[in-house]
Amino acid sequence: MIEIAIHKPLSGANGAMQLNVNTTIESHSFVAITGKSGSGKTTLLRVLAGLEKAEGSICVDGEIWQDANTFVPPQKRQIGFVFQDYALFENMTVLENLLYVTKDTQLAHHLLELTQLTQLQNRHPHTLSGGQKQRVAIARAMMKKPKLLLLDEPLSALDSAMRATLQNELLTLHKEFGTTTLMVSHDPSEIYKMCAHVLVLENGAIIQSGAPKEVLLRMQGSQKFSFRGEIVAIERVDVLYVGIVAIGQQLVEVVLSHSQAQSLQTGDKVSLSTKAFAPVVKKDIGV
Image (cartoon, rainbow, N blue to C red):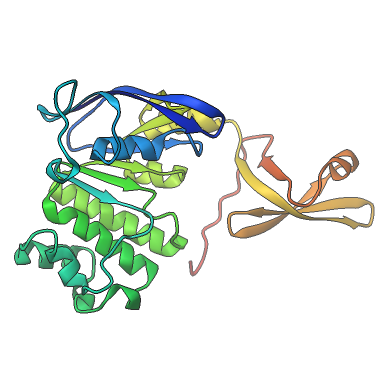
């Protein structure tokens, strides 16, 4: 059990605020932390890791990491931390990056196998793809067999296919090692697939906590589909106006009313939604 009761002043997207988190997390669980940018997600991870200080207490499986009289430094906290930018040692091979943490050759080779890196163990990071680098970072974080694995949007820079592959590999590692894992993510499908619990932060406080299906449907609504996008063009086709909207890496065309066409312009952020829960689902072939 991880018991967290911390507070810390922050400068968020809307100005000064307090990171004020009081919660418990089950040992061996996989938990997502989500919320708008600037809500305190990364700071919470850094406080748990001991990379930033805050007032309050942190207790992990009965061991005090922080309270009024105690502050355990990061190197003694039994944590693994995976950032978005990999943070690998460029002058070391893949295997050397792992063995730098601890000289456990058997564990290193096992992790290389689990993350499909065995054939790349003698390569240097600059010769690897983004997905391969993130695999190395994840494997290196597991070399200490941490009590707590902290993942700060580790897959956000990867394409969808590589992201899905690494999601599966993270789940494999979690199943084998049973490490309590906290992952910052903005991707609802990723959260639903990987996590048993989700915490939603807003202005430094937890505003929702529960199972992903319950929380995500409450946030986004089950009565309609809703997507956020950006207007890239508005065109007139005969008597109709058509808006071209970028949603992720896809472009979609939507019919606009005259008033919508007059009020919108290129660059505007918009939400697209259905008016009824009547989706047409087709399997993508060859994806």
